[in-house]
Length: 407
View 1 (cartoon, rainbow, N blue to C red):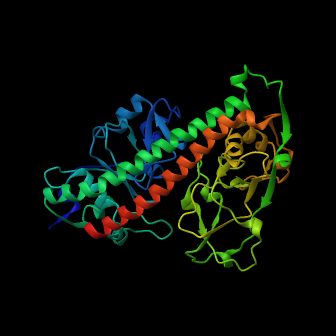
View 2: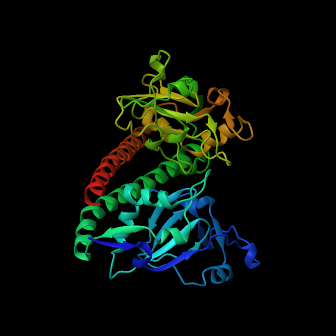
View 3: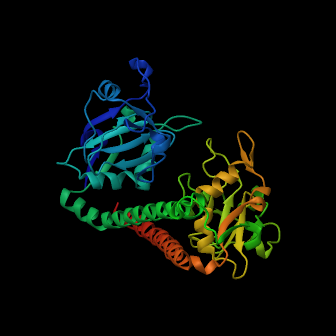
């Protein structure tokens, strides 16, 4: 092991702290066909996120802003504050504007492998060193001068590549599972809309042997557990599903669970099981991204019991009326979301009226068995989604163990 200061292993650093389009006499175009501008808000857990909410700039702005050069394969993006210490490895050619609260670090390949540098940046040891040199009260941030002073222990390149060889396949497999799930979720939405929202497979008209049924004719609606801060306590056996389980761009996120020790008795109907359907009735996002979204529970984490919060409503199919998988597919289309949007009230915090689900009607054939093939497809897809999420949970634990062992 050799001890280096970060400034000694970096060939180039880009830091555009305080830079704005207006200071260059220009503006963001907000056209997603233009060049993406990456800020700290777009980097999380080794991924680029919330790109639909990002700024964009044209070629002229790009040339004025990125005078120091283009992003290159092997570069590392590291957030400087809000949040501090999130990183993303540029693993393929990528054109973007480096925006607010983010560093671009280009490692010296003669000293450190780019993948090893990325893995190092995700370790608890490195994050602790960032925090030790950070300043701020409300928000922690690190300045370039302090960042470059951070000392790290680096093995020789051969040892680095051996370490990368053990961890990289785990990350790539996890990323593959996520890509598969993203594709499957798109298929779900497309098929739901084609059959039940716009009837595209039926030339735009509801079939003559179909009719509209109230959701309450085929499913029961359950309200969630009303909790307080006293309920939120560490508990390895029980957690509560919340609106944090709802991804803004569609999909179920098991990281949204809150561990609880309920201070009140829990009724049977307040529990949620794998593939139960939950509908978000509260939303803190600015654009009503999650309110009215229906998500099946795709992973219960390592918890033996899951309850769901008062911000959610559980939709449970009645006996033999419809399968939960087919019902999930239907409710994940535009028809259901559009219906719910008419029942929203509030400004900063949005609320969905409980009447929304009671009033919702969905088109179904008089003989539900006509949809058996679609039901089989939905069943297979949701189970695949669940298996991939569960596998990624295991892979994440293995990766964390290896990082703690090898760094």
